[in-house]
Each structure stands twice: as structure tokens, then as C-alpha cells.
Length: 113
View 1 (cartoon, rainbow, N blue to C red):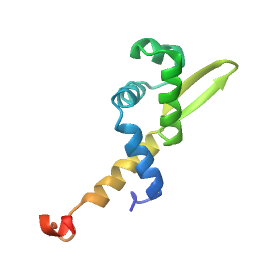
View 2: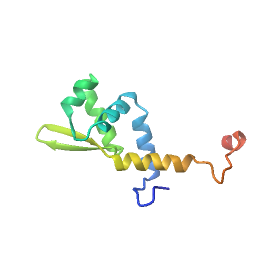
View 3: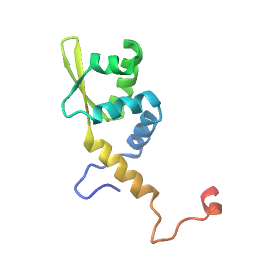
View 4: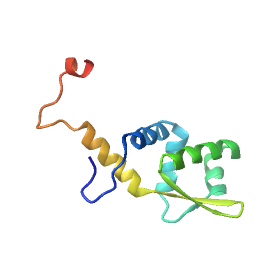
């Protein structure tokens, strides 16, 4: 259920990631982090997203709990990096879970039962 030699996610983690990505703001934050090669400072994320500190804190905590970001804290400052290994494993898991088996897909009646 994972990439050969790659990270394997639990069913609960797959659901946590899906829930985290279902929020537009968190998805946009993740896209911004993905465009960076280095860690992004909390203040930079806040400024580009236009959210207040409490809202940003909530969104970053959800992304961290889902395993999608690493948080580095230095005193009262934090910076964030995308966990590409987790994102890659999530995508691979979805592809595996949702792929048709042996070239035969389920009929609508089978899906509903």
C-alpha cells in the first residue's frame, strides 16, 4: 500500500491528511511551503496568507498533526517545512487505494453496497 521503499501511512494518518487538505487555507499554506526550498518563517506565512496569528496557529497545528509539515522553533519564533515524504506517501496511498484492480472497475451498484 505504499511506494516500494517508501513511507507507509496508517489508515488514520491518511484520513488526517485528507481532512487537513480539505480546508482551502491549509491547502494554500501547503502550496506555499511546497514552493520553497528552505523553511518558511511563521511571520512570512502569516503575511502572505492574511490571517491573524490565532487562525494561523490553528491551521499550522492541523498540518503538523497530519504529519505534513515539520516545525522548527527557536525561542518564540517558528519556521515550517513541507514533509515531502509524507505527501508523496499520501499520494501513492490514494493511487493504490483508488486504482481499479486487474483492469476491472466496480459498478455503481457495487460501490453503493
